[in-house]
Structures are given as C-alpha cells and as structure tokens.
Amino acid sequence: MNNKKVLVISVLTIVLVCFSGCQRYENPLRFMMEHDNNAENEIAEEQDNNSSENIQSGGASNSNNSNSTKTVILGTYGNVNDLIKTEDYSKIANVELAQQTIDNKEVSDLITVSNKVSEILSDSATSSLILTCKSANLEEISYFLYLTVKNDKPVIVIPEDMRGYSLDTAVRDAVSVAVNNSSANKGTMILVNRNLYCPRDFSAEVLTGIKNNKGLMGTLSDNNTDNPIVTYSYSSNKKHNSTSEFDITSSKDLPYVSILYDYVGNDGSVYEKLEVLSDGIVLVPSTSDGSLSSGVSSIVKDSSKSLPVVVTGATVENAVSYDYSGNSFSVITTDLSPVKARLICSLALTKTKEVSSVGVYFKEY
Image (cartoon, rainbow, N blue to C red; front, side, top):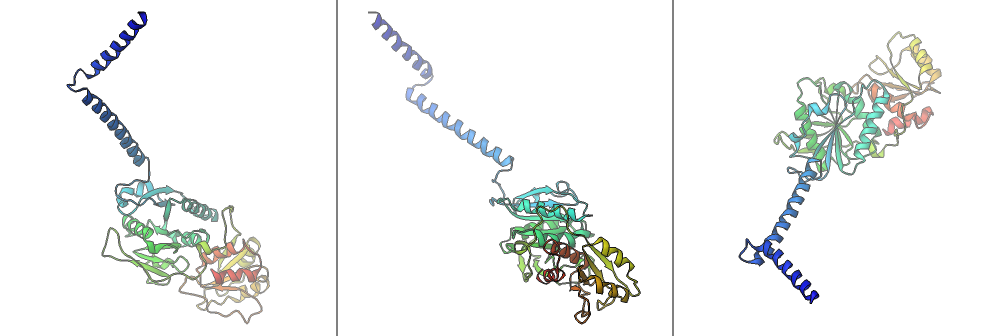
C-alpha cells in the first residue's frame, strides 16, 4: 500500500510541474515549440556576438573588402598612426600600420629596416608592404631593400615629406600598386608622383624636378582616382630581392666603405687617411669623363691590388667613361650613384675580400 501511495504522489508532482509551465498556453504543444525556438534564437545571438568581436579585434572579415590578405604600411620617419587612417583605403585593401623609426645615420639603421620588412613579409597573411621614409633617404633605403629583402612580394617605397606632395594621394596610389596582380614578382619599387621606378636606376634628381626617365618601371593612370590603373613597361634584369645572394639577417653592421670626392690638384693625403680606416673606397672624380687626379692616381696604383676602389660619377647622368684598362692599376667603374656604390661594395665585402670578385658583384647587381 505504501508503494502505491509513493507512485501516485510522484505522478501528481510531474503533472503539476507540467501544468505550471503550460498554464498560460491553450495548447501545451505550443509551449514546447516556443521553448525550442527561444533556445535557437539564443544560440544565433551568441554566434552573432562572437562574429562581431572577431571583426573588432582585427579578424579576417572586412565589410568593405573580402580580401583576407593585408597590406602593411611601415613608417620609418613620421608616425604612420598620426599620418594615415586605414579606413580611408579600406575599399581598396585591408591595411595595417606598423612603425620602425630610424635616424638613418648608420648602416645599422638600414639593416634594422630591412630585417623588419623581411619579418613582416614572412607572414603568409601579408601580401605586400608600403614603406614611408624621409625623401633625403629614399634612394639609399630603397636600393638597400632591393638588395637585401629576399622576397618577391611587392614592396613600394614612398617619400612622406616632399614639398607640394600629397601623402594621402601617394598612399592611395601605393595601396593600388600593392594589390595589383601585375605587381607580383617585381620586388622593391619606388613610387613618386604616380611613376614607379627601379631602385637601382632611380636618381635623386627625380625629387628635384629634373626630368629623368631612367629606371621608369610603370605608371598609374589619372582616370580613376580611387583605384588607378597600373601599367608596367620595364623590369630590371639585375639580381635583386629573391635572386640576391646577400644575407644580413644576423648582421649588425657591414664592412666600412668611404666616399671621397676627388678634384684636380688633389695631393692624395685624404685618400691615404681613408685607406687606413676603410675596407673599400668609392672615388667620385670632378672631371666629366671620370678620370682621377694625378695625386690620387699614383696612390690608387699601389693600393687597389688589396683594397677595392670604385670610381663612379656624382649622379647616374654622369656615368664614368674613362677607360682604366690600360693603366697599371685596377679599379671598379660603375654607373651607380656614390651612395649606391658604397652599399653594394659593403655588401660584396661580406662575401669576398678579393678585389676582382668584388667587381663581379657590380656587374651582376
């Protein structure tokens, strides 16, 4: 009898609980269906919240651009966070900002920037990089990246302090170049006033307004301000980027190479002092054909057997035409500007100390 009472009480309890939950519904089945719908709505709401948090924290989703890769803008002079607003370019690409401020007074600064660029490009989510720098350092920084960044993802270098120059327009153009399919495998490029230049051939004279088309790789059209058309017409056949042999990832400095501006009547005393301090010397003659003064020539005759001596013009428009092959001393002649000749000589000396072998690098790069 007691067992029957317990069973009856249990059944009544279950009925009362169900009745309590269903009492506001005419149909108990409707109660059960609405309960299931509420659960589904709660799950959907939770998923929406998670998705929103992903976008805010820098997830791959972007309401303006479905491209999952990103273009990184690296500032080396001014603070890019103050100069650039990523949302201004969100219709073109996913843009991310980074900063590596340098004084650019030492070779170690160039190494720091190059390694930072390589680090950013090693991220599979990064498809391209734009580097902003002081216009006075544009030629040097871009050529160093051209020689040392062993990656063929587009690297576009732009000045940020040119007179009469809109940084907003330059960045917009650079982003358009960076995401353009034709920019792949072009390596490092310079972008100035909607023209793309090869860093090896680029002349600082472009910044001063002197007409110079040497090294012009491509142009941007004017008919589409938001996303201009990029047209390429030239690619360098010199070794650079992924084909370069130079590895500076573990370097803190490079062999020291001096630059000496020679002139008629030079007694060579300055050269003798630099010879003691330097691993190599770049000579810049004042003569139009690139011949050295008599004082320096006599000293170079003895020193060039053991010390790389590079003779170059003051600008790329003033290439050396003097023939040193008939002389009893050997020098390396090049069409590179003095600052570029210094960089390639320093990098070559990390591979070899043989003067003749250093000269080969000037031909290949």
